[in-house]
Image (cartoon, rainbow, N blue to C red; front, side, top):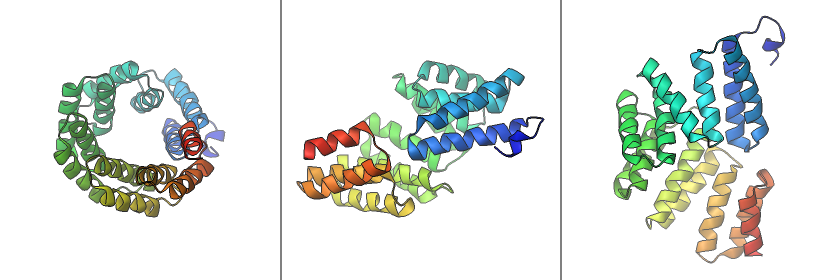
Length: 234
């Protein structure tokens, strides 16, 4: 922000700041950060309607806003411009999944994996397999995802919670608990991990521990889901 106060505007700095705002959204669920990112992207597109960085950021913004048809349209445009951009491929696959085009999304995710095996691609292939009924293979892919890791703690913590949810839903309850704990070690105070532990303890009848974890999640980020869980457990 300090760098951008000095004219002229630098689109690389604008893109970096917009990315930082989107990451803050992921960590806090405060959509004011998304609006700030969107305003920056609008400025970038006004200066250059074909800006690759700006369009890529716009895809991510539209995905967070659940405007999946627009996100898919823009992502397809970018993948045509640069077929090796795994980030755009991932967002295209995500939008296609949300639009119910599972087969198309699966092909996109596999291609993404071929180009770059990492947390983002392993996680997406795992999600596709889990949704389409191949839970055993999904768990294997998720294990590879968490092993790949990420330099951004929130990204790994998010993946760990997703892995824990898959483990829990397939009957590996204690393994799920271990993974949820690891998510909290990766990102202390992570609200999604507290909520996952809350659901775990509610399912096992440990209602006081469940409420305690939902209260911790609610203290970090007051989401309606957490308030509803606490009301149910009260």
